[in-house]
Image (cartoon, rainbow, N blue to C red; front, side, top):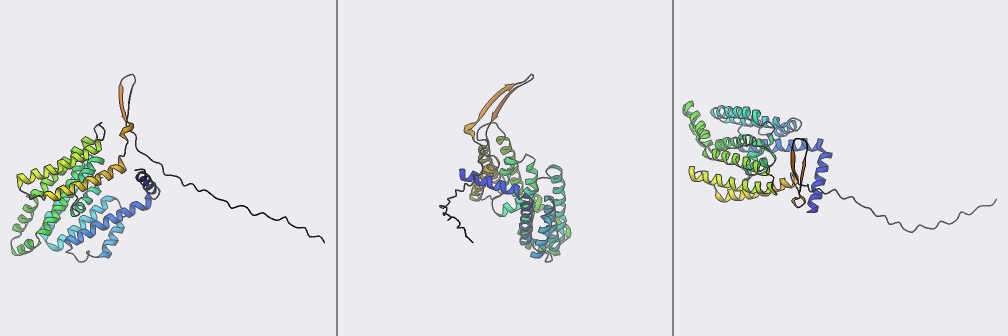
Length: 320
């Protein structure tokens, strides 16, 4: 345990020292991964489905605010959809516009959540995002999580129905519009997932704020259990065909990742908890103090072993 704490302290020291270099690098990697995933899933426009273009845009994103990465990802998606189908472009463009207005109004600082949610879906661990945001965010973070879920399911709908949309090329435009709109609005999987993640965020947030020992651990476990429960109840009610084993394993892995997050953000020693009571002219105060676990970086001690000094012979004087 001490070794992990020392490693944590070293990492924090390195980040604070080289933050000016590490932050742009992380932005570059996030933008690169996001754009590459978009090109791999819906790469219909050849002019932007090139590694050189992706590298240039990712490099631009590394020096811009986080919201710029989200904007460029949305532009890439819209360009690919425009090359694929006009109706999909209009419908998903309206959905993006509505999401951006809601997102910028309520949770403009949760850009990372919107970007990571589709990536976590592809990695089969989307459940880690509501657990993490319940621990370090607020209930409003449920809005940004919902935006990320909608983005994933919109792209998933397009990729799963490519052949159907192409087969409808000769039909009336209104019929194509109706198919795309119905496919997005009547997506029960998306609605149940948004509901489950929202309940998880709110529950984890309120439990981890309780003045009880191991509140964060209880919040994480309760959040994972409630997440599984809501998804399974939704499956029973609406027949969404949820893969039980995948949901359980995904939540278990997400729980482990949340424990890692807790180690870096909220690592305390409940065995040394102190309760203090004092008063002033107007109030009585009851304070519960839980110390953080902090280990200073060990200093290297170098022990010098000097060899026995050679005896210097006295200088002989030369007589003239």
